[in-house]
Image (cartoon, rainbow, N blue to C red; front, side, top):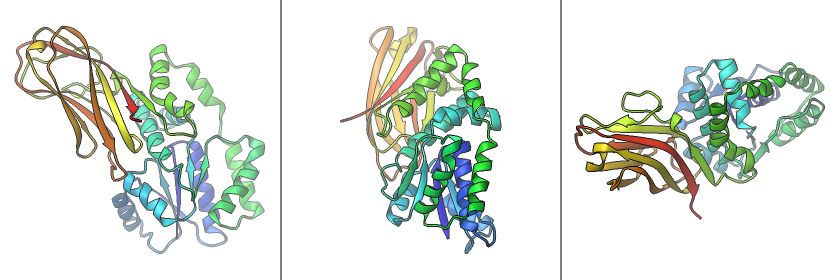
Length: 326
């Protein structure tokens, strides 16, 4: 028997998956917790752990389109934990030692993928962390939704596990962010905080989530001198299904005015492309429309490439926004 928990990579999801494992085990053998995001990963995990025929809690932090569709088609109860993604960002950095930009990508992609499960009538959606005195009632509701018996000992375990977590550190960590990190965090994750219970209609992708031709994070303008190649790539973030418009805030200088540039939006395959021939120095906004359907498992990557070799010139990415098309 497999029980599903979908949520952000944070303590709230971890606590929920462990509680579901306690419920699944009952008075028998312990249930095993596995982590996967794609159908092929699920198969590999179960084979590697010899989990076929066992009680399994499958924890999913970034469900792909096909897995979201499979969950809906199964018509089985499961949990969806859509906590404040800033909590996940903090815990990825503080507990798992991830760099700020990598943790930001993971938190944002997880939130975007998870929000796609919130409209399934078989999902119990948990949006906010409970207060200590609400944990008992929440656990009772989870057991009821998952259709599993719950004893007083199980409830006592869940209450103690929740109390042992320090919730104040998230606030302390946020207070220590510098001005740039605070602005970037709000720009990337703020859409999920202020849009509930709906799917966010706008995302902001700052330059720090993109890399230049050498694979380093963008900090200044990119020198286009050299052979035809990708100049700017990023951000590698998941988007909810729908029709979207990407607007890139670009700037071109010097010899860049003599060249064509190609913008490609990809998610495992090319979704859309646009050609750019700058006519003047300075800023230029470039719009590209694309569609994310329910079969897309991969994050969205934007590639800005140079069509032919260049002797001089620079290009700058000043930011990017993605808006839902009505």
